[in-house]
Image (tube, rainbow, N blue to C red; front, side, top):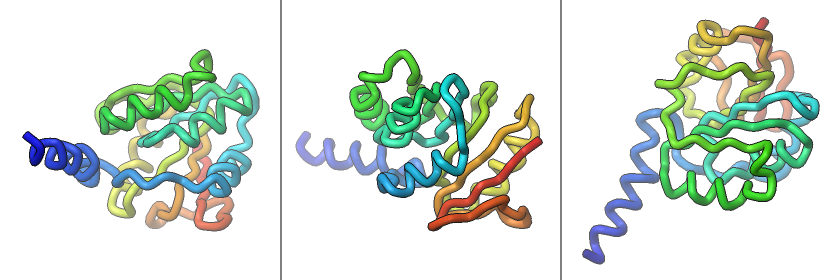
Length: 160
């Protein structure tokens, strides 16, 4: 039984690499820069695809932005809900694989995905966006697509 707990934890935190990226918290400075780059106003909506511990959701909500976070790891979903409880009127956390969900209407998207998934994400945004949307990616760029702005490892893309 004692061996089972670490195995389950490794599976929950490790298997996500087959869908996006492992859990790595975004630093406060990068969170602030990303949100500044997106330049969302109170009442606008941000999606975080792989919301981890909720740090980005919490910071965006503190700015009055409505946020929807998708997370595969059920433990992180619970952590995220606890960390964002104060902003529960602005924050929605969904235990889901965003690849299998139609993206809701939004004004901005934040991701930290592995390089090999960036082209697939670009295609998904192009196919599913119903309005202009901005994407900020931490660390990884979209192959063959020019970012509008890059700053300290964050890349801004605009879709019309």
